[in-house]
Length: 317
Image (cartoon, rainbow, N blue to C red; front, side, top):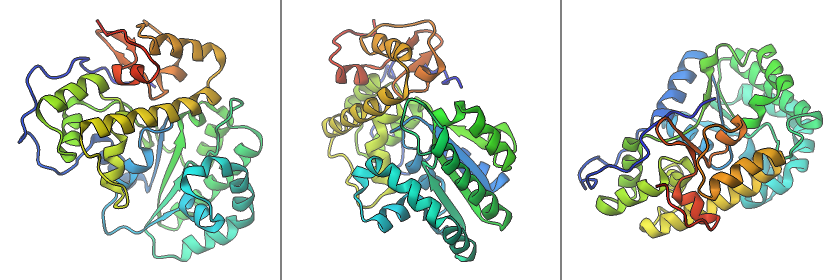
């Protein structure tokens, strides 16, 4: 999957304070909504920390009730969300023991939209194989039954699942992949969308233009804003500095996960990019890491915001 090519530079003019009304409309959210309307199922993929779950929530009509599988597991397991990744094995066991009960509950429930979040359960280098593949197949079977019963189902997974042939074959066998357009990959924001996100956080003018120059549309750079928009319990960043600190913290978390997933050869490509180098080509796994931009004019690079996290002082020039 290729990341769309957009202009590298920030807008020449300062962003006007009245450029956008504080109503967030994003292309990915609209596409998710349209896909769900067409197929009753949407598969949303992307690397860690790009806002897949938040984008799903933004796409749903307010009147839709949503069942969130991950939140249900956290509730039943009485574990904190921040430690969710430490409970993957627990989730295997929980899901296998609860699959029929959960399916029947969902079939009988008033919820119109069912969110099955990060169901691929994959954070290790070996990928979606063995127990992880079997567990993901349980979720696919649940999704198949729910869609057949008239429910709308949203499946959120990490991008490496799309590179697993056994998993993709099971997706097709379950009827989840009806057409290519039913799989949505979250990639770069347009400059217009960056402006809209910053406007929501009341970041405008030169501060907004400067931040856009650092972020270059990288989704993780705007995740703190997206989280605040879609979750009342999350505070909006106080200012552009607060936004940058939160974004850099998230980038560090994303990198920790990516290091577990990518093979050493791919990590070397990523290391070159985070040191400020530009490449003409690199593996698709690196392109889809959520830390890399591909631009027709400037090649493949890592934006300054991400490079700053890894101690690079080099510029794009």
